[in-house]
Amino acid sequence: MSLLKTLRHLPLLLGALLLAAPLLAQQGNTQPPLTRMLFVFDASNSMNAFWGNKTRIEVAKELMLRSLDELQGIPDLELALRVYGNRSPISAGKQDCDDTHLEVPFSANSIPAMRNMIKGIRAVGTTPIARSLERSADDFPSTNTGRRGERPVRNVIILITDGIEACDEDPCAVSRALQSKGIVLKPFVIGVGLDEAEKYTLRCIGNFFDADTPELFEHVLKIVLTQALNSTTAQINLLTNDGKPTETDVPVTLYDQRTGAIRYHFVHTLNDRGMPDTLMLDPVYTYRVVAHTLPPSVRENVTIKPGTHTIVTVDAGTGMLLVKIGSGPGDAHVVPYIVRKAGDMNTLHAMDAGSAQRFRTGTYDLEVLTLPRMLIPGVRIEQGRTTDVVVPKAGVLNVVAATPGPGSIFAVKGDELEWVADLDPVSARMQWRLLPGKYRITYRSRNARRTELSITKDITIESGRAATVNF
Image (cartoon, rainbow, N blue to C red):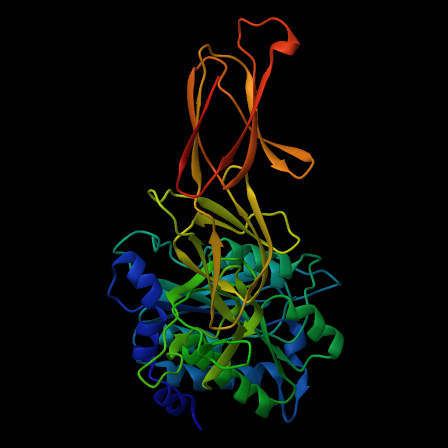
């Protein structure tokens, strides 16, 4: 099947519009993205080696020309051509590592100039891959794609090479820098007739495709162009504990696994048939998928196969937690609490009693910020169920002293006293909300200068009721 027929089976314009939807929503932009595709073409001396019945350079030129014919007229696409090794012949063991040039710059009608350039290419020089990639950064016209109203742009590099770096530089580091700065998407690398060691050194640059034969090279080039131009369909299945894709209504973020940049951000949805909604995703990237459950549900190194509906599964079973204040007389009072994973002192979430929250299934420890603090370990969250936790309603303790002075409130725990709070040493009237239970208040007037003048009183606090201690 020709590349043009392949593209007809993948609706380019619709795919591009849907691909850009998250970005457009943020920017208020309704324009489809512009794809700028830079071919970095190897014209080093090694391309003169025979590959079947022809040299590698002859095969590569023929297939490039054929592909340009099929790319002609595709909307929202600009092409450019950089060539290395075509101007400075290797002589007497000397090589020119600056022999890399933008032969045809980007424009909406660059294909005729690219055809003429490709027909006349001679393979004579060396292989400065890193320097070619580094200089490619300046080949792409500058844009302000981060500004509201600016058209989104996808910068794509397609490197076609039959060899490895020959100028003692690091093409992988250059590629990572280009991607991390957002200059280009993950480059495509087509290896032409490489041995296993050479393939290994090129994989770190980007999306590597191996073309062992001229026939396979033609097939690979079609795949790369299709992938570079089109989004493809996918769905994200958020799985319950029993493997059903019915978890939903969760924000999901897709990050570029390599750079950490946000590529998509949306709220997961089930369609009218109760299945996860279909998305259009760019297959160029490898993704880190994060479903923002509590705690997050994460899937690393997710790839999308171009032209094939890809199902991405993420384990994300959840249940509900509802901490309630018990019944009793008196007005309800706002009580905050902290949620931690069982055995982990790091705070996972903090909220007020009376509001429900969805959590991943598992075991959690709660710390309710009452006086005294109430620890509730081993709370189990189960799939699709609501776990109710009831906190007793507090009572009110009033302390009235004839004269302010130091002192403290203690909870009576059998034979032990647990400190709860200090009295205000400059106030004669104080009030606390305390959990039901037995308490001991120790007080000494600020005018009393002897320890034996301390006063201790015991009192029982009941839910929703007030009690007063007078000194």
